[in-house]
Image (cartoon, rainbow, N blue to C red; front, top):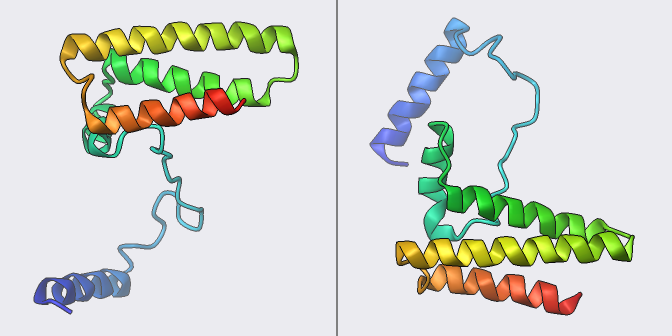
Length: 125
């Protein structure tokens, strides 16, 4: 264990003894872990920073909409509704691709891998 880990553990133990960690908001409740699987790995840190500051770029908002549409398509039973959602998804994916191309990030390997995953999901259905 490094010196920094020991110091941190010591400070935490002291705070527990003084009762500073009692009655914290969310105590006894499970942690809410945010699912970032729909965001390319190399963009996750910047996504969290922007989200925590209350701002999401239009590309990420559109990407989130695509993910929610994909989930809705998977759970949809009515063929007509499913068709409409697939059309909306395709339209949003085209808009997203155009946005990425304008920003010059259309050749990002992470985005290409993400696109391949989306395509394979859509083809499998």
